[in-house]
Image (tube, rainbow, N blue to C red; front, side, top):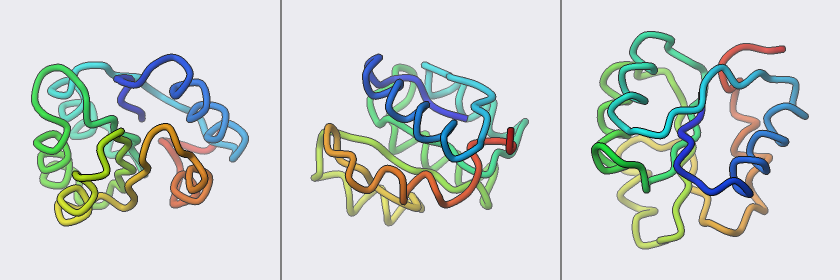
Amino acid sequence: MRAAGSGDVLRGVIGHVVEEAGFEIVAEIDVATHLVAAVAAVKPDLVTLDLWLPGISGLDALREIRKVSPTTRVVVFSAHDAWREQALALGAARFVEKPYFESLENAIGLGSIAVPA
C-alpha cells in the first residue's frame, strides 16, 4: 500500500522498485485520513508514506498507522531531513529523503507492499 502524495516521478520509482521485488501494490491513496482507514482494514506488510499528504499531517498519519496496525512497516519519504528523527521515533522503519533514493531498494526490501505477486 502506498501513499500517493509524491509526484509522478517518485511514484514511478517506488512502483518500479516494489514490482521488481515481486510485490503487488494494492492501493495508492492520496489523502492521509483515507490511508489510515485503509491500513486499518488491510493490515499491509509495508506502507510507503510521503509526509506531504492532504488530510492530516504525514507524521500524524504515521502515529495513527502505528496504532491501527502495529506490525505494518512504514517507509517515510520527505524532502525535509529535519523530520527524520521524529518519523523514526514515531515508528517509521526507514526514512528516505527525496529526491535521493540510494536506500530505496533496502527500505522497500523490508517486506511486501501488500501481498507477493
